[in-house]
Image (cartoon, rainbow, N blue to C red; front, side, top):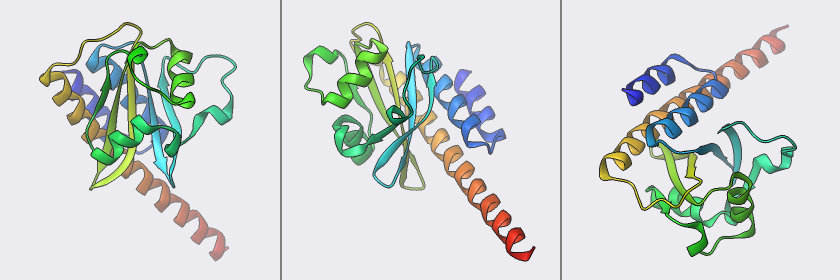
Length: 176
């Protein structure tokens, strides 16, 4: 029922910020986890779109932009087009950037889910738990992948709408 609710909300909005916030709230809720973020992929960089809970005070603007080549687990999820799960962050090798993001939220387990639309990676959902997590059931992974597909199309549609709006503004300005 939560997946249906999130799907309906995503289909009703063309505002990218609203889509991203709905998406991450839905992902965290569907998987019953503590924290989440969604990063948009653009030109080899990841730009923070929304988080749950909201960003902590003192969060610098430059923390919202990540270089994809410094985030190997995210890159792996995007390239394989499959979720990447880390059950215990203490048992895997992490880059300094990955460690900073994980420690900033106090996460012990993390799941990276690629968001793909029309065969193109659009974003990555990152959800996590403050406790070590043994794994997800096949049902939970399937739910997450369905939600990811819905988010992918919603993000692609919102980006397309923004591009059309921008082109219309430019055309009006040129006409004036």
